[in-house]
Length: 276
Length: 287
Ligand SMILES: Nc1ncnc2c1ncn2[C@@H]1O[C@H](COP(=O)(O)OP(=O)(O)OP(=O)(O)O)[C@@H](O)[C@H]1O
Ligand SMILES: [Mg+2]
Image (cartoon, rainbow over all chains, first blue to last red; front, side, top):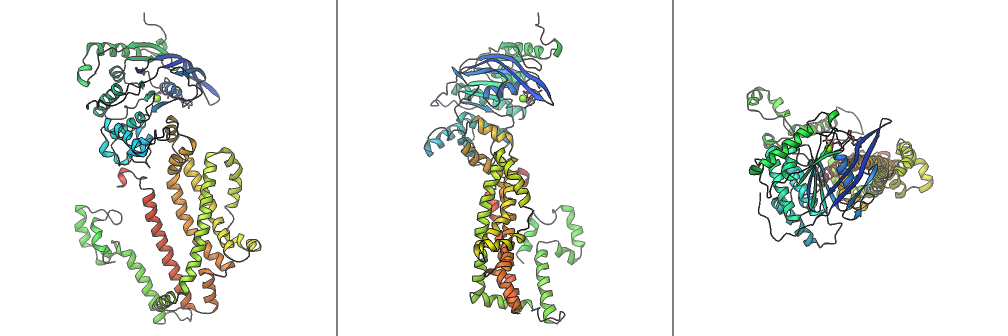
């Protein structure tokens, strides 16, 4: 999408380890198991995707990793640190980008508010950092615009710049590309990979778009129907850099995509029976 | 107001949308209908009413000692402003209004946020507020005279009493209606609580706060004037009673006109300020 700026410094992602995460919601007097004993390991700087049918607990799992909601049981580690009780420096990129930007702040303020409270930066240093990330998403010229003046795709790029400007050890993406048009989505995929290549943060992407998962990720984890449980982990393994046109025709891409689709389209009752 | 007329064609706010097909029927409409369909019609009505006032007094349509012509009132207004009498009186009123307004609104905003953010504050304060806000402010003035005596503190308290509860309630509903995604955004970036309060909750509640401030402004002025009438020794409410007792009706009407003009201007100024403060609370369609 754009040139990789060589002077940019990597964030250096940390590993994420999830042990025996379960989540039970209580509703209308009854209880409902949303996530069932999920264990998962994400390597430092890895791009992992989680796919699964709607309602299987993907968002719940990701919010638990982010520390936005507590698990019923199990633990989450970032690096060596147990972050289950004490949220660490991970940033959650919301699906509802248009609502997640603060409408009373312009683009620059939206980006800066993610990190200025955390680090004692001078005004000009903060602005430099903000503009570094705005440049990476190609929105420098729009720094003084307010969210309502931007298109949906632009708003999502601001949200991405804001998330990365906080320089988190891990970026958690909850279907961040699902509500933009198909072309913008391809554009944002390329942008995300470009940023990831430069910054080397650890990324966990939740999606129900199998193509998106395989195109972006190193590995793809498959969740079963509710209660969500990991039933498969597949190496995507196409070479990088991945490019919108060629990668989608890569035999490896097509094979992995078909394998995952077949896995996901299995009937709910049969989901837990290992395919022999 | 002649300057308003040429604007009409390009105006988007008032009037009817200009469609190509709408031109022909419009031309066929009578002259009166065409004039009424402009922004000037509102001003024309004001002028017509003032002319009616003038005519009823001047041609003796209303037979009364207490009904001076509008022109005489304007002359008195001019004279009383120049003499400094009216300026002093309106100054006293506005000074009371301002202090009571700031006190009541400031307190109301703090209480409103406390109610919205802390369950304990809500459970403790809400019943009291629900009861207190139903008390008409005018009813508390007579007993308050025992406490404060006559003078500014009494009136300031009355104004603050009138605005604090509506202000607390609109602030609380603004801060309480905040979209949960904003609090989640604040959490994911690990923002400290005071920062979230200042940069997230406060601006999110701002449109509600501004609406509360606007209604409170009119309320504050009314309560000031009324308390000056009940317990006053200064200000425009007191002046109105004085002039009425002294049968200085022209001076009385002049004071009312001045009060109207001042209140109108304050409201216009407030609307301009409000538009600036919450300029971001717009959508694409609205522009
Ligand atoms: N706060 C909550 N209280 C009660 N039940 C909840 C809550 N949040 C989620 N659930 C339930 O947990 C299950 C999993 O929800 P979740 O949002 O994680 O699904 P998802 O996999 O992200 O689905 P989608 O792909 O549609 O976004 C759903 O059945 C949902 O109804
Ligand atoms: Mg979801």
